[in-house]
Image (cartoon, rainbow, N blue to C red; front, side):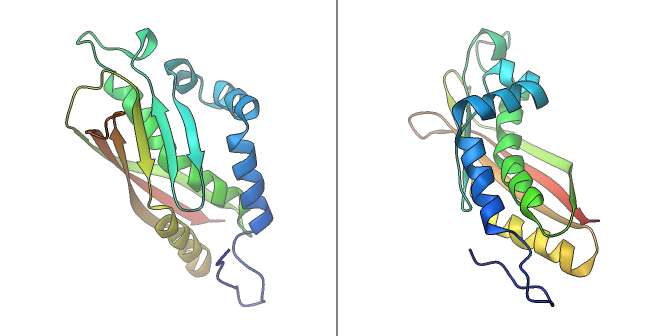
Length: 173
């Protein structure tokens, strides 16, 4: 892993902790139990993790009875949960593996809805390296740092359904 060394020669993020988090998140039962305990509304709506790595995170949400709206499509809030999870899970991964405590908070969200979501919608966030750099900057400068991360939702045919720009604030404690 390309962690930037701190002044004393240690790194900002522990490689083994990052890999351990990835294994935890990709374990179907453990992560499902975590979602049920910490994010019950998302779990009930069917929001699930597809994959997570140091480069990108993919989540999905189905169109079904618990995630529908009266217009026969996926309710926008369910789409937002899946979009936010694709940006928040990598943030949690690095916050938990950081050499210092880091607080993280969503401070803004912008959404664009392009097409009706009538099936499974897959959200992909590929801004993880930039987010890691923002967290490193927060630890280096002891100042809060913000970054806006994009999550794009597509249907199984690859057509864009919605995109979310989630603004995260990171602060080293």
